Image (cartoon, rainbow, N blue to C red; front, side, top):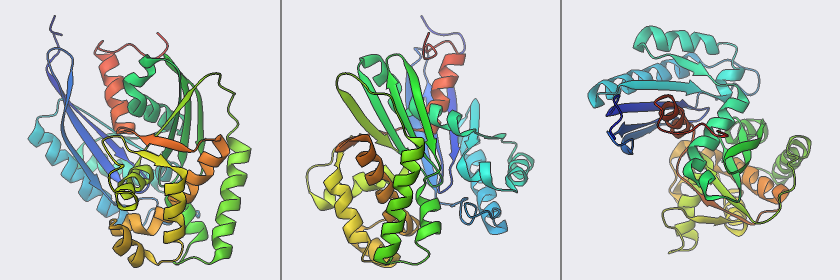
Length: 320
């Protein structure tokens, strides 16, 4: 039976520390969701923030131009509901409130600063999606610019969430002020990752098989490199093995950002931080005793959609 409030169009914005991105869907009369559009804008809001600095005026202006574009896209697409959130960099920036106010003033978009655990919960809801209904235990990894989230879930609800102050931008700024790095810088970064994980990533043991999945910019970028490393092993949800990650680390560690860009054909801003992101993923896999994970599409924006569907009565909240 058609839902009385449908069809509707929803757009979710995820203003991350490295990239601002959105996804827009149409929710049809039967409650099914069709992706209408998606865009990514590599603004890098977190640049300079993780060492105690503020968001630079140029970054604020760049972000505002992006939000103006998002508002125009939402109007063009006929969006009924728009939800926008921001994460690690805005939690830490002393002038984060200035950007929130400017976005509202210039575009009318209410930008909510997510607490770390709420960010992780949305990532889990968005990336795991209906996988939670399949049974078994799921391990979800998400490496962002300023933080990494680890979610251990069983059907039907998320039950262990860890948010770690380990991100590709944060680690790059701390240990790799120039590329290529020295061997000592690589060793120091690995030691820092291991110390952070030892202090903040104690998860309960899980009986039976554990399926490991990952999302977000670093893992998506690494998955895109697999076809270059081993042609033919990609696919819609490519499998990333530790040996792939180790290969990227070994190659990236000997190059500057331009060399990484030429070798891996990554966008320039991703080339600057892929080494740090790969080191974080390698550390997570080692710490968790995993040799591989599968890339899934989805994240914070998809989590926002899922919550909106719950508000419309089209999905059960986790745990119900």
